[in-house]
Amino acid sequence: MTTATVTEAPATPEVPDWLDGATEILLPSERHLRAYWDADLLDIDDRNVHDTIIERTDTFKVRFRVYLKGRLWSCVCGHWCFDTCFTAIGDGKDFNLSDILANPSQLQIADWEGCKSRYIDLCVDVPPYSVPVERCGTLYQVGAKFEMRCCGGCNDGRGYVAVAGHEPQGEYMFV
Image (cartoon, rainbow, N blue to C red; front, side, top):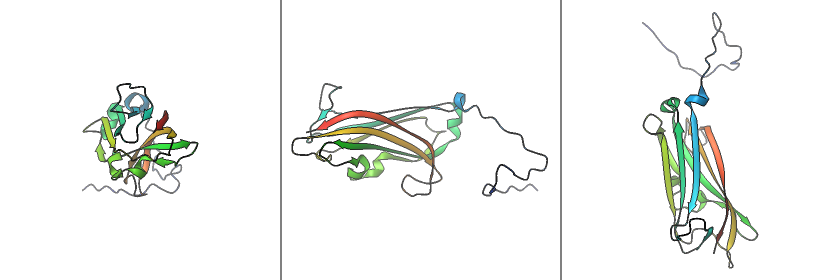
């Protein structure tokens, strides 16, 4: 009869009690574990895709895309957590997109499995009047961020960050 025991890692992993020594396993992570990430703010009512002034009365979208390349991603599972950070330039309130959405879980993909999909395209609608705007408009420095967490969710404090990244979006004015 064969038995297997799964326990916590030893307190001093650099000196484990291997009977006849251990052989290091070199994982070719760069070749078999790559990721590409992109985020965009999309003013859907404007024909000029390069316009960075968004009307407070308009819905806009925040799009997060992750493309995972390499066969090791098929063995990875976890929770994807996305957010966009708005820092006011001048007068205005700093905030994260997750703070103003009625349902911040829209920014998460729970229980993701790499064996099922290695392309994520998450598009979140931001309703009109969501972004705090001063009387003469507010200029924001915007950045998008993501994490892939394992062994727990995005907000429960138990998970570990396995992959993280961010991307500056530039300046956007809300009027």
